[in-house]
Length: 562
Image (cartoon, rainbow, N blue to C red; front, side, top):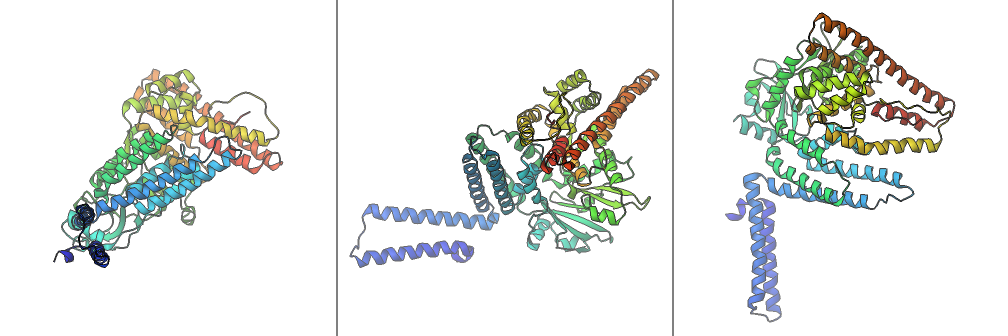
């Protein structure tokens, strides 16, 4: 009776124990040891007791918690193994090695591959954390960010039974009882949930986002594991300084697990952007929404990174990017309610039925950041002062945001160089010049990290937003001057708050003229730099790697050495 109540794996524990006891009895009789000393009897009984207790605990966990805690132990050991291997690999790399840079890049890639595999095997929260690290490609080595980006598309779906389990617990009904039709084949699988296509009783097609059944049970144990491993790494590597990033990421995960909160975010976003006819947010069906199930209006469209499909629909990339930049400029500088995860899977494009031009669809509203007035105001001031090269005003605005290195902060925001140095113009790039450029990038890393830690925590996800949008723009070929559009928005928001008296209008007109001139001047300088290295490359005076490096540096805000 008792044995049949346990799962198969647990019954094997009892069978093994019984076999061991039989062997011990046979061994005793064979050698004439009919009596065991009290000490020799004690330890086998202790071992048997421990085995039985462990088996009982496993059985109870399986019956009551569906092996949640056992699974947590497996994920912990797997994560500990990965962290240990990565730590040992980095400890083997010596800074004085002749091939230090090459060896370090190899370890970066090897470690990133291990992290990717571990995140995929562990699933859930591990994938979400991995996606968060992939998005901060302005901080982490490219080997990590390019590898972990695969987590956006390689999440593993779960079974039909798991989906039904969520509906039974949240609604007390199966999906078939709630919807007219429900397709159990997911159309998308993400870190926290899967998306299914369904049809309401009214006949309307909807997208149903269903959270993984065991995710909330796993949350505390998995988060504890990640924090524990982070503390170990921080103890071993004294120069490790990414812990604050994990702290900021984990604070938002609680909100992301609440789909009611996500639905409220979607409605607020739609209201904030209702003045833009080319922006669309799917409506929420609240009657079919719970904490772990979110039902939204079905949206047809393509990812904003799908160049081939947009070309088929005769959509202009220039039009798409202008609308995208205006959308996020409105959120950052005006409303202060900023979508913190605008990767291509969350931004769709479709042809508008009204004018045949691009319409932007914003999906996945689980992660938002609010920029309070005391941060948003100085940010607008800083953005305008940076364009006008008014360093005293830049410094004053940065201090309001608790940032000391205002020039580095400007380069992080604009993601292009702001300070130009006078000096000689070289006619040929030698390997020594290229090494020097790479050293500049390496030297700037610590100051960038310091600046990111100084600025308000709400700004971290704004930088993430800017960086993700920049990556989308880069995929499109950088057909639009993103910093220019955003700079104009920042100044416009300042003007609105300043009032519209005749004197203010005159003063703002003069500032606008200066502002536009500075925008034109900076764009012209960057084009000249790009042309210069193109000419060097075409004349054979610089390798292709130098041209690529310069373009990357111009995008990332690192100054070339003159």
